[in-house]
Amino acid sequence: MVNDLDVILSEGESYTVEFKESADKSLPSEVCAFANASGGRVFIGVDDSGRVVGTDVSNAARSRVQDTIHQMEPHLNVDIEVQNNIIIVTVPEGTHKPYSCSKGFYLRSGPNSQKLDRDSIIEFFQSEGRVRYDEIIRDDLPIDERFNEAAFKRYITTAKISDVLEHEAILKNLNCAGMSGGKLELPEDALREAVVNAACHRDYFEKGSRVMVEIFD
Image (cartoon, rainbow, N blue to C red):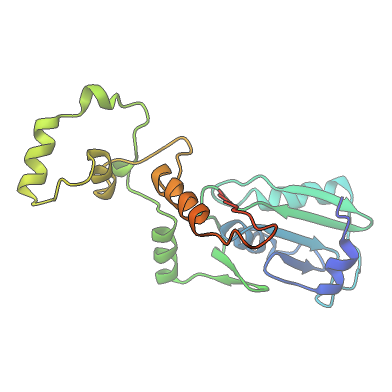
């Protein structure tokens, strides 16, 4: 249930909100655009001005909406609910970007959904880190058994790569290895140094001041 529906309708369309009078053929492109961006909600039964005009909210109508969205590639699970005489489609940010529909690739830009041209699609693939098969990290590889120290040293010597960094760091910089399972993007040593610096340089004469560290996904 959307508790702030009246506020959303009064504020109008935005980066995460789209109004549609009916579930027409453009619905997949709107959902696709949200999935390729940060997610959002489509309110079916609302005109561009935010006025509720209502729509068919029967089970059959909701099934049609679901079937229309299932045409996207790759498939994406969305939440469909009914509030009064409005269908609300909540679209999460996709985890397998980029998503496409029969009309192509779309991306949310401000309050609009923009179709991506060829160069933009290539750029999007690169920005999302979509890699070739031979670049996919193997989580099942026993690195302690397979890593050849002598071959590694021969390679960095031949390539004239400095060995001042740890082997793990060099392999990651060469895109030959990576971290999986939720390791931090920043090394723990860097985070520890940031906390130490914050504690050392804070103004202790300011009453109520505190050091706060926030780490986001």
